[in-house]
Length: 190
Image (cartoon, rainbow, N blue to C red; front, side, top):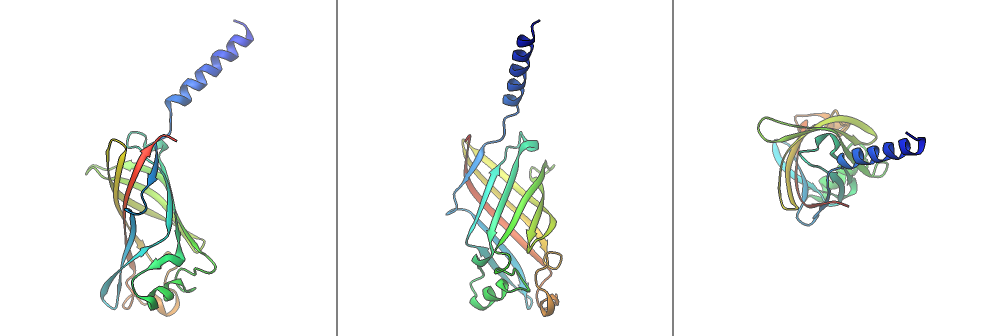
């Protein structure tokens, strides 16, 4: 067999393998219908907040968990708890420090299917240049190319460096924050 024929067959084989390992579809998020909300305790009462400005890049397919990936960026300045004083405080250095660290970042490391039909994403959350592991659980449904994802994660705010100094008293501000995500998207090849 000639050297050129060997190279040609090798190239065809590599192309065939890479085509078979295609990456999952890209999700084009409908930001009007989607939301990232959080729930925390202040003085024993729960309050809800949300991120008004965020963006995400998602490629997810339950049949291709090994090549699925997601990342999201949250613009800290856009925090909204429907309380102007609290929102201002959350932007301060003791909390998100929006001036020095305007973006919080979430990125998946791996996905796995759970026995109850949900999925788990082992992820990293970076706030104020401090990265910490985070487990995100979610349900996923798809009809044609219409995708809906509902998920949640629990964040230890102290481990994340949120609420330093006088704010570290957990009797005043709860230690754990529940994050809930609702995504609507179109999944398609790009």
